[in-house]
Length: 298
Length: 236
Image (tube, rainbow over all chains, first blue to last red; front, top):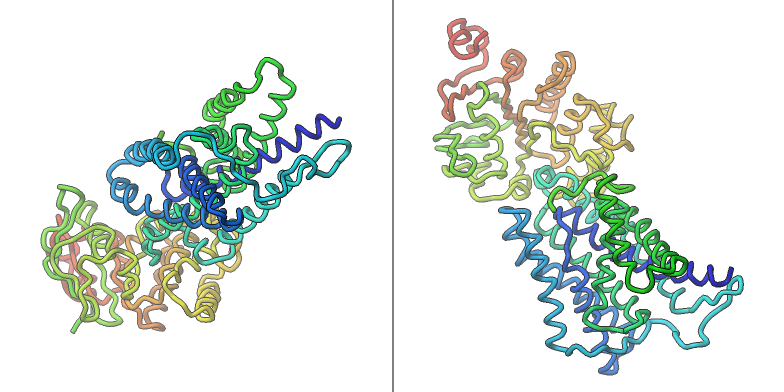
């Protein structure tokens, strides 16, 4: 029972991180209609920025907030300078640009901070004894902290979408860009802010997952997260923030249970399992659980 | 000086030119209708005027040029388009659709008042306020599209074939409302239509479009009554 609970906690923690990464993908997809494959590597870059700041002696919370600001700028500038000019001509082009950025950000991080793993400190107490016991299983405070941050972040995103004018405009642009423009919504600026928002969300995924990851912060830290998050976003529906949350948690739990209870899968196959899930969703329910739009452009 | 003055308007899609030097004007508070067969360039005219596609020639609204402006800037100047096919936000609620229509306004109280006002003009919008717009019937969506365009408080409302696909009873209801809005608010109307008879009742002046050019213009009354014009141009 306690081992089951521990796996459950692990699954929820990882799932929470996949959920916010998936939400970043959803925010971009709703506006732009493509999956930003560079989202994970943007987050990798901002996580390196956060790590570098902690090395300079900054508190880790300050570092995380600066990383979020950098994430916003990276996202917004990418949309404005690389995506917007090519998007109108060809949908495939934005996908290719995203793939280019994927390798670009990764290489840039390696170039600046070399390829050795870094020790990213946690935002929460993360010592051996920082846990509480629930039903005989250890629930570590840093896992609990991840849950809290994710809940706050999700709440903030839902507030933004459903209670603010900016969010209303974002939903309008996602629904029908031409009508939004005809109503006076500056669609270009809204898309840019959407990419910036995704950059912020992604940066939190990075600083939350790096301290939990077995290999700490390295150049490959975010790649599996992006795979899981893509699976989560597809599972929940690419244009549904609710779907991203549900999908993220589902994938996280699935991963923990499969590695825990299905012996032959072991430590490396869950990524393959995630890809298999992607293929099956695309085959049988292309709009995902909560989605309305299917992916047409891949 | 006219409210809207269009001179030598040309526009099209990529290399295909649809409008070949179109001239028209709309006076303050006037109702003008543009008639023409399929492919005459009616929709292209509306898309060019609202800034959705680029044009050459000059478009002057209220003494200022609209040339080179995008659709959001054109709305800001006081010209609002009800696009063909309505263009409602199908996954947004009816009320949210109306609120987006006020995207450029900063007067919160005024926006709320206008939402209430259009909900009382079109009671069906109030009834279905919390429903997603995509679940509305065609006629209801058309009313929503008109109300949304009016939320920006335009001085000139452009309507692209508002009668398309609607039952005759709904169309006359809609046209009656447009006439009311024109009278009560002084909003000028420029509509393009294939449904000549109803449009001629509403309008005071008419332009007839053929392959991207104005081939006839005049008082709506003359178009209504002159048998030879009706036969030659309207196929009635």
